Length: 153
Image (cartoon, rainbow, N blue to C red; front, side, top):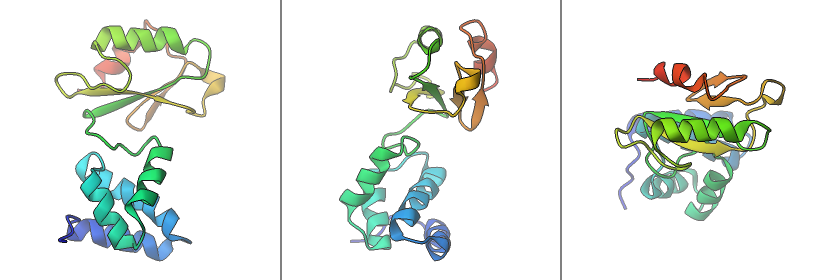
């Protein structure tokens, strides 16, 4: 069975494997590498990465499910994570849903945004908070959503 991993992906994964204490630690970084190259991690990519790391696809899928920054379906150009644990998040989530016309887990028709819940952004002291791609936005209100989203074409 021919691997779909590119030479560049394999090189980055092998470099990570050399620095990782365990194959499990390397598999998380491996999935992040594949996602950086492709935007998400398909079933085929899981299978090929598992073979490359000499692990089972089931093990990798379990790890991917645990880490909600590994996308197992295609996502938009920008991913909005909202904390679903802290007071005030609901009004912010609803403002984003109204503005974009999507529910959590969905992607806008133009492929620009995907909205996903996350258990912790580590920003309880400045909540509600959202993260767009790698940028954290603190003290978010329904009124500030528009200005934040404008930054992400």
